[in-house]
Image (cartoon, rainbow, N blue to C red; front, side):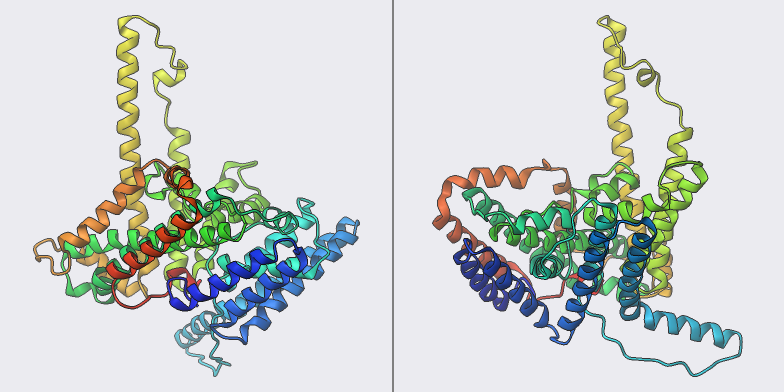
Length: 493
């Protein structure tokens, strides 16, 4: 069930109405939201609801065992088994085919080809997201950062809550579970905030992302050799905008829907294309995943503690596994390698680069004429440095998106080769697509809290007028969007 469809609109209207009717009956409301979430997930393929429940039950039992056990050695064994089983489930469904394909290629090269047990496995939608939520819950209970829940319903609802089930954001148990046991409230501000995010998310996905995908990106990456450097370069920038609008659009809708149901989620994107470094980019892009990798992989590996070479190793391992999380293909692995190496080089440069005189002096400019000149010079220097940092970071990210989007390495190499041919006139790039690409990139420099500001202004509208605004907004988006509803990109992860 896709968000921008009539089916989902009817589904959400029913869920919204009944859930608020049950607001004084906590247990009944939780059971209803759980049933609605399983219906939502089973709408794709009901068979995978069993996998979702199995994952939830596994993590529930692990949490209960950890809560009762005080011996450190036994607790380590429990958490290791639980995390291992979670990763085994994820690995079987997501990486079985990739592993056998790779093994077959290796055996062919060694001239010892064998018949291998190939299975046609369907990848369950959202398996990476609900598996990571389960792992975070078990590890938090192990670390005593969260209490194990007594109710299986609570944990099942935490893992399966439909707004973020299939494409995130990855929600932490310590943030979500307490909200299940507090009286839900729906304020005018929540309504306004939810509507702003839902409409902005739908516009990003249905208009910007879909137009760029169908008119430019899909064609460029299907056959790069058919186009010149202008189309290819704009196509790469267009994909940077498409994947941002597609994924942040989903997150906006999910956060907005959760707000209308009385739940608060943290933001998942923070204008990533205004980042001044790759490290800054990962603080702004898919924040729930980057913080998950930091807290449950990078820090357990040792983080930045100890010898610097080990810290660099930890960065590379974390980013490579982040690439593997996105998909079972060499392109994703190399994408992770690129980011890991680039962040490591970035750190090395920052550590070796001498600080400016002004910074070493603590910006003690003084009030004399020389001090004023130094202050202006420092401000201008920082602007140039920041602008250069943003420009370099954005283009490095776009280069990595070539690997991420390409179906295979041959396509990525063909596109890179094609970027040298600037003599061919553009066939795909139009003024309309140019406005979508560069207008969207320009919007990254709007105030970061624009949605909150707009919601505050809309509070005075009242619930009825806000509802009418939502209806009119949906109709306008439907009218200007291309035909068809493309699945969200992150459904495949």
